[in-house]
Image 1 (cartoon, rainbow, N blue to C red):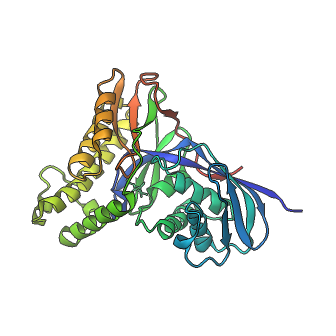
Image 2 (image 1 turned 90 degrees about the horizontal axis):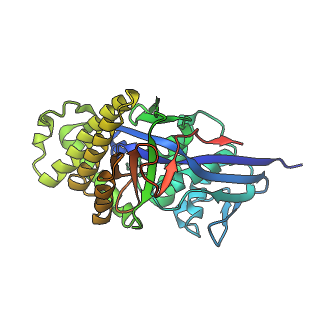
Image 3 (image 1 turned 90 degrees about the vertical axis):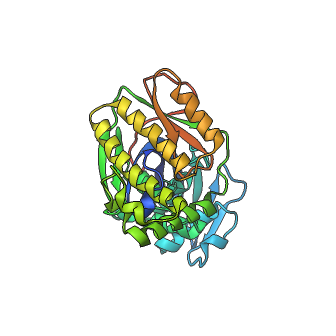
Length: 336
Ligand code: GLA
């Protein structure tokens, strides 16, 4: 008799610290109470998954060689996990999700992590995140960092996660009960994320070839160590990362102290840095952040995730906003 397996993996929203994970910097995301469920039986010699949101199923051979060439495109993420995990037995089941797809809440990471657990991954959380990160890179060709998969895998109920992406350590920080975290879609689909993301990441590695690891520059007073970067554009990319790492550190302290006001100010500064130095915002995102920040009871708001459209996250007094999704810091991926 085959046993039904059900795996759930949450999406994540990043409160602060974007485009810092690819250089081993700091991020502060939280797993949310929206996510993806994979249910079915371990059987057969391929992985077959129907999805409630997709017209065509994923059908993946256990020896799939090139996940990026699989069709339909959502099945590439399933194929990436199969290629990384190489389960001995296939799977027959279905995928359901409460996450908006492509909004910047890590729907692909949630799918990968849930599939890995459903297919039988059994090991430390960090290994689950590393494996599914490689699956994402293989499936999409995007040189992503570890934040999304690790937040989904390692979420803690009631906590945000202060993650050091170099050491790959997770420090849960309680989110006070008297604040709301809201995610608001800009209405703008994310565009060019893949190529622009890769270009930004390459720029950071180029900057590091000149000044060494950006994560090691912790004195942001005068940014002296960045002076040897003589191209203003490249300097600005590096400056975003160095100042963002400092903001994440300060935001972790503010959260621990229950200081929503300071946290909100750091969020706004983060958005400006992503807009002006890293140049991954859009006019629509900027206008949304400006409008939210001008609303009474809103402590701060910023684009969240890769940028170029997608969502904004806001920290508010309870009930100050009624648009978008009210999300709660939630536990990480698990078998149900
Ligand atoms: C995407 C990537 C992450 C991270 C963010 C930006 O979500 O998958 O690794 O780099 O963008 O912070």
